[in-house]
Amino acid sequence: MEREPAELLKDALALPVEARAALIGSLIDSLDPEVDEDAEDAWRAEIRLRLAQIDSGAVKMIPWDEARRRIQDSMRRLHKPTLQSAGLAGKRVRRPEAGC
Image 1: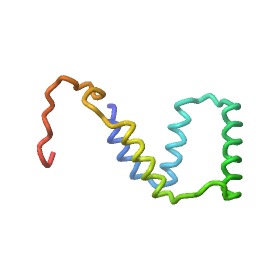
Image 2: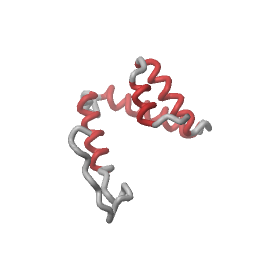
Image 3: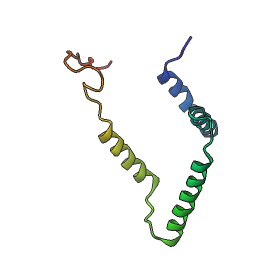
Image 4: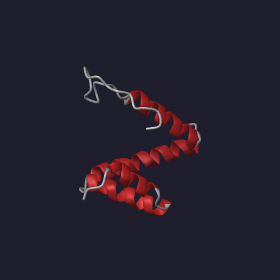
């Protein structure tokens, strides 16, 4: 019997941090099992560049809470659901009753 993604997510979020990190790694690896060495080298170079920028003071660091808020705000603006994107354009949609 297949489980709903929301149910899987709920269970995954209940795992300890280390187990969630391992699960995330496994899921990401499953998306593209082939390792592109050129991409790996490019990521290493990018990491070195960013660390050098931090060490030199060329970039301003912000707290994680602020970065997360900015990311979430950006994602909401980019992916704001619409009736069209949900396949409901031109259809009557009944609002859920309070408490549902």
